[in-house]
Every structure is written in structure tokens, then in C-alpha cells.
Length: 206
Image 1: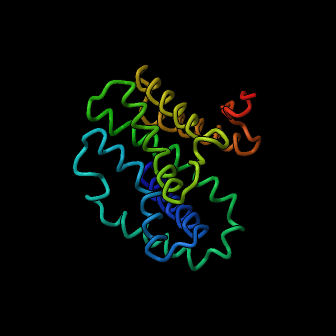
Image 2: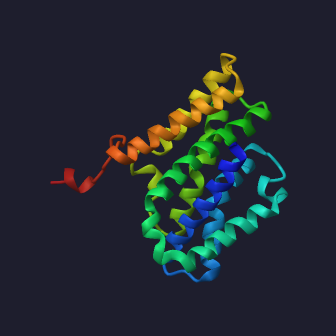
Image 3: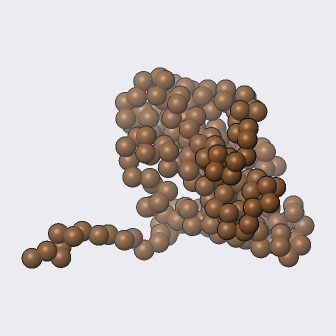
């Protein structure tokens, strides 16, 4: 199930990256590149930081074809995308949870300590969106809008806690996936967010 969700997620992330590139009036190559990095950037950064070589997508060329094709297809169907906004939010939430669980599993297999495993999950979940926004000259949305990175943290902690107590892996995955998806969708629906730190030195200058 996780593999299927992963494929759906990288497709949705690639399309979101293409839309961001379109808002910046990028050419076809720029759209394809941003789509690719948005979809697979989190896993790439994780693998590099953990020393997990070869990087995952280099061993699965279809991932490249899928993400680039999804990005280019977005250029054709962009005029209809606003009608699918709710679907994209759901797919993005599913992707966040799936990427986080996959990232945790990669670090676990490499025998890293708990804090590293948690960070590997979070990096996998959110870093593609961070790369997208940086390359599009925007403040990363995952760090300043509704609960997003914190949902990834919760999913990682819940998943690892249940594994620690010997809960069946399938049950653990389903529980983490369900809780994470529900929390992310609730955050979107009711605009839950963490307190914002706003620092403006000029306010304190007389």
C-alpha cells in the first residue's frame, strides 16, 4: 500500500512543483526540473545526509519519467487545476505521511539512533517543498502555514513509538497514516498553526 501511495504522492508533488514554476513564468525545462526536485528532493537530501548510496531514485528510473511527465502534463491541464484543489490537498497530505514513514524506515534499516530516524522522516516529508519554494524565490510554505512539518514530526514519533512497543507493523503503519492524514486535513480545514515568531527590530527603535 505504501508504494502505491508513494507513487501517487510523487506525482501530486511534481504537479504542485510545476504549478509553482508556472507562477514564476519558467520555461519547459524549469517546470520539469522544479517538478522533479519537489517530488524527489526530500528523499535525495535524506539519502545524502544518511550516506545511503546509491540515492534511491537513481535505482528507479521510472520515478524520473513519472515526475518529469507529471510536471510537463501540468502545463497542458493547468487551466483545469483549480477545480481539483481539494483533491490535491488530500494527495499532498497523503504524500507527507507516506514520505515521513518511508524516511523513518530508511534510517531504521541503517541502524541510526532515534533522533536521526525522526529527522530523516521529517526531511523526507518536507524538504521537496522547501526546495521548490527556495528555487521559486519564496519563503518555504511548509514552515509558515497550517500545521505541516509538525504533522510529519507527530507521524514519525507515533510510528516509532508503536514499533517500539511491538505493535504489528501493518497496524502501526495504518495508525500512523490515519492519524497523520486526519491531523493534516483538520489543520487545513480549521487553519491550525503554530505560534508565529515575528521579529521587526525597527519596532523597538525610538
